[in-house]
Length: 142
Image (cartoon, rainbow, N blue to C red; front, side, top):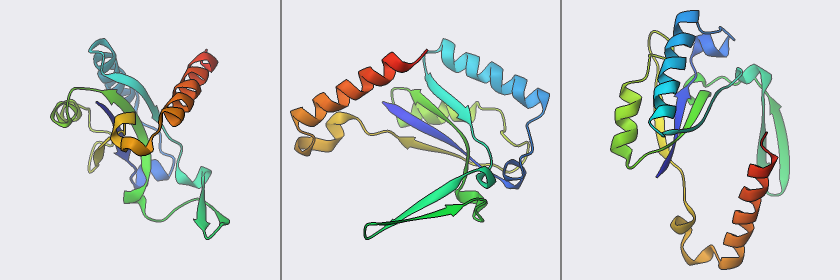
């Protein structure tokens, strides 16, 4: 099972405040633990929403809104992609995570859909397309 682990933003991360050397070291050690355990597939921090944009879709129209965005608790400061055996295992790993902001913070855990989750609507042709695209993406990585 794959999960996206979402580190929610806070006022400091949205203001562009960079983590301390200690937090970077603690997170580096935690990431090393995740990699050695075969759990971590990817992980990145994100720039504040002031450096981003949103595209709203409505009845065929697209409207672009530049950041920053006001609802900090709904924003993402970073993420991991993990492969673990269960939601409970993902929770146990998150509980071992260094506090991302040395204060109030939230980390959300969401399971990633797998091909079999889509049922018969995900036809053999669509599966083949998905497999081809994943192979192309893997070939493009350095």
